[in-house]
Length: 93
Image (cartoon, rainbow, N blue to C red; front, side, top):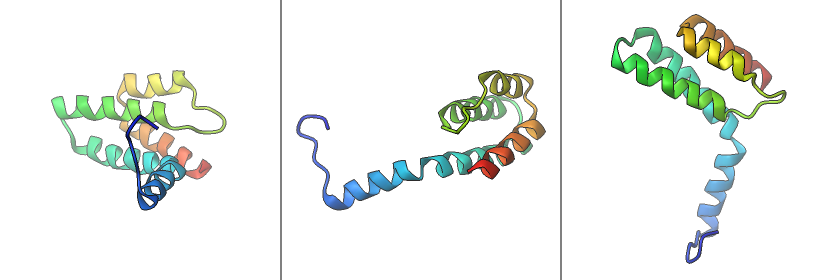
């Protein structure tokens, strides 16, 4: 921990549970992003695609997610492929 930083026992539990459930939190964030992408246009869509790519890179899955597939889906901006990929991730976890 950083010098001078103190967390109560309750706060430590919150942080521990966050990291314990981080995978499901990221999957939920991806599902929400897919829903938003379905109706987004213009700059908002650009922002959402960037968020989806960043979130996909943060997901820790076994086996690891192939970077080429992430780049292909986000590069083509294919919402249906992203939704299918997120479904596969949810089925894994």
